[in-house]
Image 1 (cartoon, rainbow over the protein chains, first blue to last red):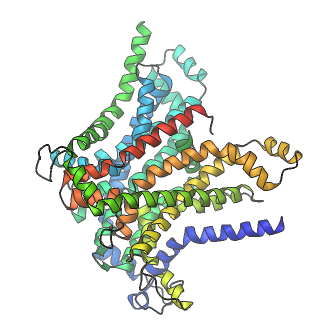
Image 2 (cartoon, one colour):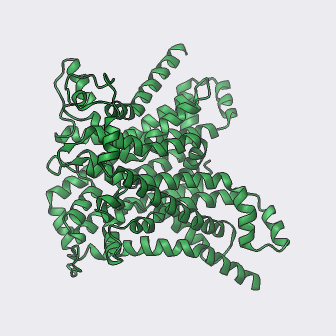
Image 3 (cartoon, helix red, strand yellow):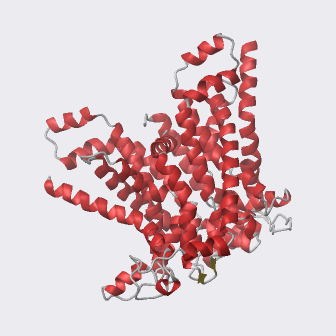
Length: 274
Length: 290
């Protein structure tokens, strides 16, 4: 018994190092001066003379702030669109018995599994023909396609688990479906809506292939593409600013996650297993 | 009758916005892909129908053959590793004497943080000259390893990063399922005098099986369709030897402008997707998993 719990602790420590080390390495590298960064002998696990120069370079000499703003615009607008549309769809699929609702429920799940990498080639043609290349609109239009199926699927499960009686009582009192949804169902489903919002935010914030395909102008790029294409040029790696950029880009997600871990975990199990 | 009609109308109007978005930006592009893969379309050129030439060309192309091999190899090995490490982590977290809430949150980080940003950390760690892995190897007197520039080690690194990114998904999925197993079942088993391995194999494992299948199928779809890991770590190199479907489709379809071939390459992911979708739906409808 003793021995096995000792082994458990070792296993967990190894797992923690495995999980955290890439972020730690980025952090250390982001604080190093070029002299220290490009010194083969320098210890990679600690920093001798920490400096914020990489962060200053990133903010002053690259378009990082533009990318950050673009990511923010795209993420907020697509999250709002997706949540609104998904709440309506999920409520209809969970509560209203209309022709085809069962088939649509299954359809939503299949679309949920369709990866962006399956569609980006032909979508690039659609975006081109709509004249949306190099415009944030191309992302605002396309990101809901992977946010909505997930959100609808998760919300549908949650709505089904709510007690029906309250809604029925409201309807007896003459409330319309829309009013029941707004006044009764949404307040009850608040935890699920927070979960879905968090997922939409994370998915949109880190999306790469659509952003890479539809947008080539530096000022219009988002964080995922801007950092990886502007700070890596062929064989040239601007390691200091690159690491600083990666960390600053991940920061909003880490913050949101750390406040809403429980919502995230419940969404993960509900989305993947239910 | 009247009421039924009303409910149908309301139902349709509620679902209409999502249907419009999904139809125009998922269904239509998907149909277009199925059409484009039989044409010689290029960027800015409509192209004409050329039958299965694209597929013939691809299957005879050695880079594409390697790509199929890579996609299957990366997916197969990393899904198994994710599953094993994830299961191990879940079992330990479950048996902790204290509430491991923050531990659970930390372990989820590679999965939560958009993969692009975490992969940048790996890119740095794996750097042949300044990266910390080679620093350790040299410190202990071993020679440096060309992590991303030799075919073997590049594949190794891609699988490593895939595993890093995906095992938390299994760990938290399994942990959720373990918490859902009623304690009485274990008590009954210990009265019958089973040891802990028997308990796992005969009690826990069968109960975890539906979860295991669903997580695995999800993971297969996500791993085989991944783009950013290979794109950031190797861009498909050295000499096109580490491409997966997504990166090769990008190289042909976007960088090379050959939309028809690009569409054909990405469609190779479709069977995996349909297979997984059908099985997941079957398992979900049969079993009660919470």
